[in-house]
Amino acid sequence: MRTKPDLSFWKLWNLSFGFFGVQIAYALQSANVSRIFTTIGADPHDLSYFWILPPLMGLVVQPVVGMMSDKTWNRFGRRLPYLIVGALIAVVVMCLLPNAGSFHFTVSSAILFGLVSLMMLDTSINMAMQPFKMLVGDMVNEKQKGLAYSIQSFLCNAGSVMGYIFPILFMWFGIKNTAPAGVVPDTVIWSFYIGAAILLLCVVYSLVKIKEWPPHLYNEYNGIEENVKTQKKESTNVIKLLKNAPSTFWTVGVVQFFCWFAFLFLWTYATNTVAHNAFQTPKTVTCPGISYDGKDYTGKFLIANDSVIIVEHGKQTGNWLAEHPGPFTLTMADIVEKRADGSLDINATDKAQIANAADCKYMSRTVLDATSNQYNEAGNWVGVLYAIQALGSVLWAVMLPRFRSRKFSYTLSLLLGAVGFFMTAFITNQYLLFVAFALIGCAWAAMLAWPFTILTNSLKGGNIGAYLGLFNCTICVPQIVAALVGGWILSILSTPGEVAPEYLMMAVAAVALVLGAISVVFIKEGNGTAEPQENPVIGEDL
Image 1 (cartoon, rainbow, N blue to C red):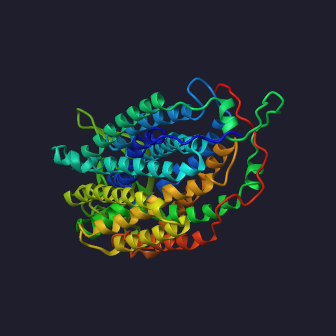
Image 2: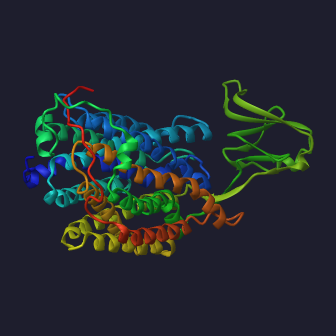
Image 3: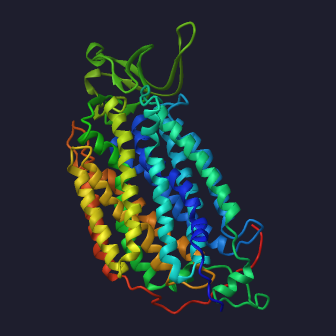
């Protein structure tokens, strides 16, 4: 077995530079998705549910990408083909997602379009991100892995700073920061366009600068049987891989669970938390429909009898029910357009026969006014706060290799992040929030650097990509769990008739990080089990 050579700083840099563009896309997603869904009319209690499909897709896609790339070799390389595919899909979706409210969809259709776009964006971003993690495992020796992942963390957070501040920069440049009800402001739309362009450029740079080792050289550097002709080619068995996984795979996975659980709540509820606490965003009462006989009737418009509109764009237009006792036919119209002659064009409808209006009541909910200046200023400010988090993470990432104990620095980082989450829940000064998000950045830096460093030092041979793909499940599963229980937890904490207390979800996230810090003590660095027989890398096309 040949020893992997030390790489120059710039070769380590080139291995991870694409992370810069990928993370711009990821930052735009994490900072603006809840803002986009709130703008197009989503209920705050439903926000967490919109985050279920992205990690669910990652749960399926990432292990497949890892295992397939372990057995891939063509003229583009071993890992890079998956970077190309993922990045190109991400570029297209980034141009579509912020326009969810601009295609004249109904509220439900706009939310569905946004949900599918979010699913595709998160999947493609992770598909583009995964090769960079695998390249470090493939080509960097154990002595340099800490430095390599620190560089990756630096570039990741540098990209985050760019993505996070785009909306407020564009506002300063004069791009409009407000829009009609249901439409995402131009500052956000253009941020996604520019982010997509930068991602494309970063992918081209990576393809030019990264030269993966050919199969025979990879096998030599990783101690895999060189005589591939006499080696029986076998498909990778997921069950066998999990059964033979080192104990580090599982203990680090527990820490990952609590960390990603917490950060899903940050991405989901931070915008409305800051808008409510620090910007005193005005409240508004919306009326999504009418309740009758135990059933809710909702639509973009509700029409009684022939042409009387009683609910329009979520706003109650007068007390129509009190003036018309019934009976009448209630029509739920998803699309109502006035023709040139003044008639109505009604599509995608459902109808209900109302015998007595006294048995009906307007549905109502109190929410933050997403069309107000305060809300959109808060949305931009959250981008600035995320940039502070990224800057704090960059500085902390430089410090992490200086700690003699990885476990100590890991624990300390998560505890600092927990303090930042608690502060975010209750601080009402927009500038004091800088401190809170800088502390959250400390946790983020450790989450990006240490799990993969600790894990890859416990792995040897040709199945590194498969294990890293499976390890990505420790990122996806906690997000799915957090998304499923987030709305339920928020409902327990809510008071009927009042704005949902999304700021309390920051305190719940803080508790999760404390539990993650406690779990670090159970990690044992190094390989805790016998190494399973690895398959050699064999050159083949996709």
